[in-house]
Length: 166
Image (tube, rainbow, N blue to C red; front, side, top):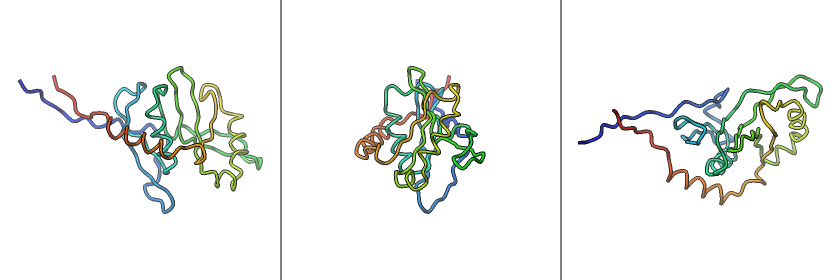
């Protein structure tokens, strides 16, 4: 007897904000991923080639349990003394339960915007219920060849969106 198959689309993104669809200066996109912390395959958005590379490298790791892009904003007092808000690019939960709030920026922008100082102000108010630590990832931290290999691995191991009906 032949099994009946149905298509079940991925869960929607859990991002608190959806990235703008168009940008002259960066890559925007989304991918379907499956991690142990997901009930079903889920859509994950990214806003740059650097975020995509980080995401690919993260999704192929055995010690990653869950990834949430664009988690809720953190309110803090900026280096200029004014109230501000920061949305991390990803909140990564490892298999051991550690949660890492990840900010991703090209090193040139980190230096130009004095982003490291601003991120220190954000990190000072991040609660342990949100993340155990804050991590800044730049283009100098990403191995492009390893990221390309991770992207190929993800392409070959894409989660199925087809299920057998009862």
